[in-house]
Amino acid sequence: MKLNQLSLFLENKPAHLKTPCKALGDAGINILTLSLADTQQFGILRILVANWKKAKEVLERAGCVVNVTEVVAIEIDDRPGGLAKLLDTIDEVGINIEYMYAFTFGRGDRAVMVFRFEDHDAAIKVLQENGISPVEGVELYERG
Image (cartoon, rainbow, N blue to C red):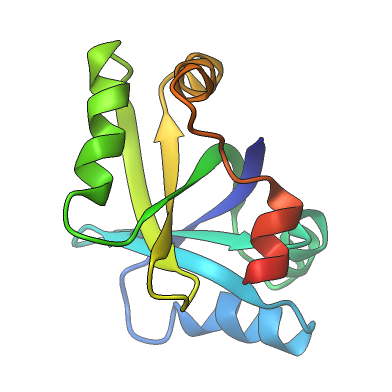
């Protein structure tokens, strides 16, 4: 239920984002989703791919510094209030969200939120107790 996400630290300069994207493309690795956060000096590129081990090797060969972190993907209603409903469940038990990002399946009514929780196991347990199941990696990668 936890997915492995690749995080890369990039200098915040022109063309630095191109290196990892080109390396993955040249290796035939599709980026399912990504998030890019920045400061004045550097950025953090977070990506999900189907074969994270191969992607990590490709990126490291291209000179990138890569960190692997666990995240949880949760499918929600892609409509006003869909995220708020999910957050109500998480907030009731005081689980901290370190960051999150989203993407859609192109089906119009569903979206996937990718969460980095302070405590993934506690978050998964609370979600499941409330009838919310995290998206399995295989299901996610097949849809993307």
